[in-house]
Amino acid sequence: MGALALVLAGCAPAGPGMAPGIVPPEYAAREDGDRTVPAVNPKYLVERNRRRWVNYDGPEPAGTVVVDPYARVLYHIVEPGKAMRFGIAVGREGRGFRGRAVIRRKEEYPYWAPTRNMIRQDPALYGPVAAGLPGGLDNPLGARALYLYRGGKDSYYRIHGTMDPTSIGKATSAGCIRLFNQDIIDMYDEVPLGTPVKVRTRAESLEMEGEMVELSTGYLVPASDTRAIEADRAAVEAAARAAREAEPEGTAAP
Image 1: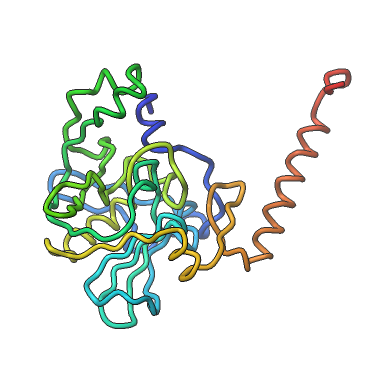
Image 2: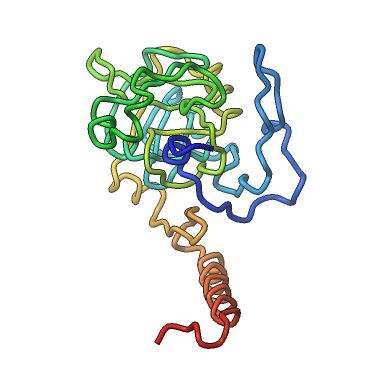
C-alpha cells in the first residue's frame, strides 16, 4: 500500500474480534458486477464494528440515517424504535460537519479526487493525484458512496466504502464516514435518494451513547466497560515490560 493509501486508510493495528477464520455471511466475499469484494477479516469485526439490529430511542423518525462521528457508529432507522447499527471510521473531514442533510446522489465505484484544500495542505501527497482516481476497490471511496447535500448544495460530506477495512471503528487522518464495503453496498440498496441524514454533535453523542474511551488498539468502548479498559491497560503495561526486558544490557536509557 502506497503513501496515499496509508493516509487515506488510516492504517492501525487491529483489535481482538471474532474467532479466527469465522466470517459471518454478511461479510463474506461477494461478486459485485465484474469485481469480487474480498471477505472482511474476522479480527476486524469487533462487537461495535459488526452490523447488528438494535433498539433505537432517539428523536429521529424511521427512514433517517444517523451518523455519530464521536461514538463511531451509524444508524439506519428502519422502523420506529428499531435500527441497523454499523461501525464506521471517521476521517478529518467527517469531524467537520454536524446537523441535517439529505442524500441527493449515489454512486457505484465512484470517482475520487482530492479537494483543493487537501492539495494545498499537502501538495507532495495529493498533487500527483490531483486529477482524481477512477472507481475501484483500491479507490478511497470504496464500492459505493452516498453524497450529502444541504440547502440544495453539495456539502462534500460522504458516507462511503473503504479500501482498508482495518480502519473501521477508528479515527483516521483523512476521509469522511466510511463503512466496510459489504455494509455500504447493502446500505446503498436500502437507502433511497431523498433520505434525511442527521449528524450528531458531541453533546448529542454523549446524551445518546454516553462517554466513550479509546483503547490502545484505536477502537472505542463505553466508559462503563471497565473490564475492557482494565484489560487493555494491563496488555499495554505487559508489552512495555516485555520490551524493557528484551533490551540488551547497557542499552537502557539513562
